Amino acid sequence: MSPHPVRLALLAAAGAVGLAGSVVLAHTSRHVQGGLGIAPPFITSASFMTAGLFAWWRRPHNHFGLLMFAAGATLLLGAMKLSNAPVAFGVGVIVNNLFFAVLVQMLVAFPAGRLEGRTERSLVGLCYAGLIVTSLSMVTLRRQCGCANPEPRNVFLIANRPGLASVIETAAWVTLLVAATWIAVLLARRWRGASRPRRRIIAPVLWSAAAVIATLAVVLALRVAQAPSAAQHVVSWISVAAVSALPFAFLAGLLRSRYSRADAVGELLA
Image 1: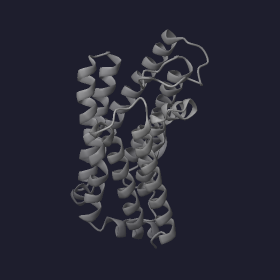
Image 2: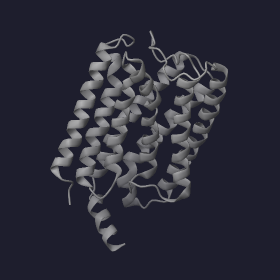
Image 3: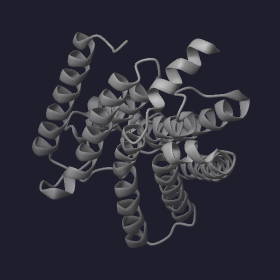
Image 4: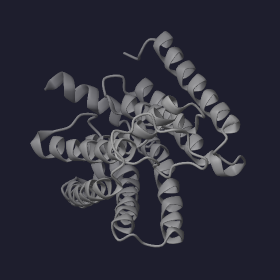
């Protein structure tokens, strides 16, 4: 049974309003330059939310579509850091990294839409914890996070301890790098253990997921190594392209098969 049209419409409307509001924030911000430079996060968010709604419509008993929508929605919440208001700016910085945590959960939970076993839950939990810790450290232990210029006043500052913040953030990034590597191994094992028909279904997402994990791992490694900013920017743009393609990779796998029907039958027989 497909989700009620009203629910789909409400989610679509909420996403559209959030997207429009984020664009307005970007264009009225005093610390963000306009033009095409602000487009990537909004394009990525719209891609995830649109693909998520379509996936939920096609597979209403699977949470994967809602996870995709949530990934796009958290990216919009992070856009609050574009605000000129100190409180909204701080909240945006805190929640900005949640997009990547939801993205990791989505990658690990594919195709069932839920996490299976302690290992998967632990890996996803590590990613959530590491990303939240880095964000909290940035706003509570640094007078300025370096996220904007000029930067609104930091109303969440507890103590200006940049040295301590660097130690905490480095430890968190190393933890995230280990988790990302572990997830890449998990996805590789999942691919090797799949049958040929199942590989045809999951290939677009798993190959795209492998590209996302690889590029994010490189981004983390460059941050830990404090590589030149130019190198970090290049790899970051590559990761944006890989992440933006991921929801379409899932839809490609969905449209090339009748996996949704097989999944529903399997749930009835289980």
